[in-house]
Image 1 (tube, one colour):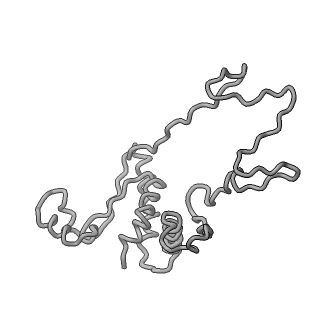
Image 2 (cartoon, one colour):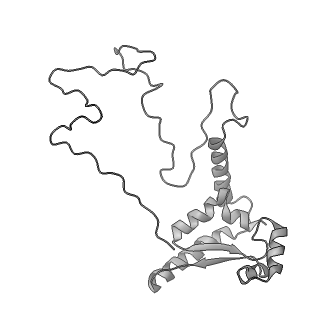
Length: 196
């Protein structure tokens, strides 16, 4: 059974998600942990300390860097989660989820690989992933391709012009002075995950 493939998941996303979820760093080590078997054997025979693990059985190293109480909690959570991946079942929920994710990734990444009908511009959107944030694909923004409301003039090739009402200020151009009392929204702050 390919435990390494099941743990990594499509493009390594399962292991990355597991690490983010548990707050622990996980490394797949030991014999069979590298994709290139010839390179693995060469590195194992080199005798370098950092490749000593290649002589050991296949295993997962779980590391947690946190204060003791939190570290124990994260470690137990990581162990509970990783045990689910070490069941040799080809058709379990984890594998099904990974297959859905893989088909979603392949469908959204390369639209020119023979999917859909060539030259028609019609493409069926892939199924939404069952995990992750949001869980669904957001609807397209209104604008191009959206139907005009009833009674509105239909414009072809030009941007729609909003009706001008009396007493309502027109939208200001870039660089024009701001309206008194208006504060622009705050700039987005960079958020990053903590280092392990």
